[in-house]
Amino acid sequence: MTLRIHNTLTGGKQEFVPLREGEVSLYVCGVTVYDDIHLGHARSIVVFDMVSRYLRQLGYDVTHVTNFTDVDDKIINRANEEGVDPLELSARYIDRYFEETDSLKVRRADAYPKASESMEAIIEMVEAIIDNGYGYATDEGNVYFSIAKVEDYGRLTNQRLEDMSGAREVMQDPQKRDPKDFAVWKAAKPGEVAWDSPWGRGRPGWHIECSAMIRSHMGDLIDIHGGGNDLIFPHHENEILQTEAVTGGTLARYWMHNGMLQLQDEKMSKSLGNFLRVSDLLREHDAQTLRFFLLNTHYRGPLVYTEGSLEEARSSLRRLWNTWRELQAYRRSAAGADDAAAPLERARAEFRQHMDDDFNSRAAISALFELARELNRMMADGSMSAAGAEAALELMGEFDEVFAILPDEGDGGELDAVVGLLADVRQELRRRRMFDLSDMIRDRLKEAGIQLEDQGEGVKWKRI
Image (cartoon, rainbow, N blue to C red; front, side):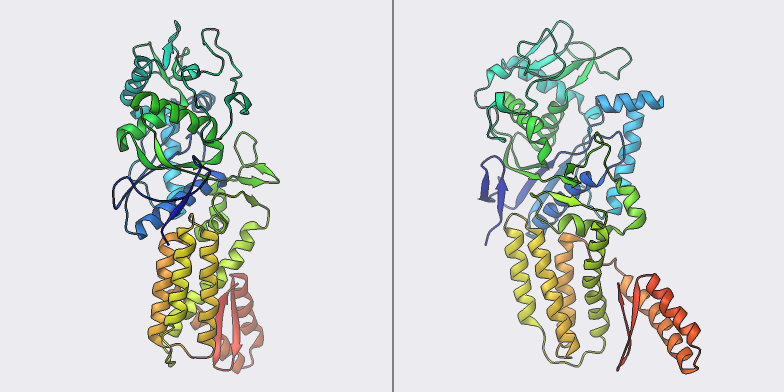
């Protein structure tokens, strides 16, 4: 099976054929940096980290670019509230972004262009839009894209412009030729951060920055453009118009959009005041649990967060961790003859089948859990050889190159030694009939998420 991607532009799955053999260009819309990222942002970030990881596992040379919107009304307003320079504020939150995404085990993109550092490319593109008859400047120094010049607006949403929610702007400029025209350059207001341009001091509109960044960093046409499905209209629709007005060709061959994270049937967002900061969540939960929660559903569907969501995710993930840890111990003493080749090959085939089907991480993770159950059975009856255990660990590690949900390297051996020592001390205390102390060790370990199990062949432990 070859990789198939659901293309928002066509409304269905298509076989993925890159522009250049063996190479993939992937652009993902980033965040507006005026606050910490929340769990809704994290979903898109982790989803496209997974996409990039899998493409690389398939052997593609991936160029992954994610932008920062560091010039925006929200940034200016927050900076004014704090009495700092807007670019100083955005730089602070860019640093925080990297701290938090690094903690989430997100591999860094190849480039992170900023709007503030892309002015030459942005102004050049605005000039081309005007020169090609798709834009016009007003006396006040604003530049608008003329919707009247476009015949097929709404290709991503598959709707007519007049039927789209939010198609009309709330604030109307009397110099606009059509209320639906959108700004590609905004004249500066007193005290705002601004740059010189042929139309006077100003700053870019939101949509133009991505078109310009893609063109300057990746070329006129890319393989995959990604982002949350809340960006389809108007942001991505307008990106298409801007690029086509300049290049005469399409912007991206495949458009991928992840579903929204919801709280109590509402989209999680800062504007609604119902967001969960990733920094706060990472104080209570490990990164693997957050990634597992975000990836254990298909990326295009909605993901509902409830109060117990992360605890449920943690409980499920620990079962996988237990198998991983027990395999590490089992391979050192295994006596069985079965090399586990059949279940491993079946699991590898199912993993690839599901991931090739529009990056279906939920089904692929289910295949990983099914493999864990089979491996647990083989360890329990002693039928698996040490070589089989080693091969199983390698395969689980191969899957984890895409998901990054298994324990950190080193978590097994050192913890195994410490818990093993405590278990031996407990056994000695029990032999001496010092049950109050032995029970204290058992109970304190349980509070730490580790359960001791007294079995015929000795004491085993697992995460709970």
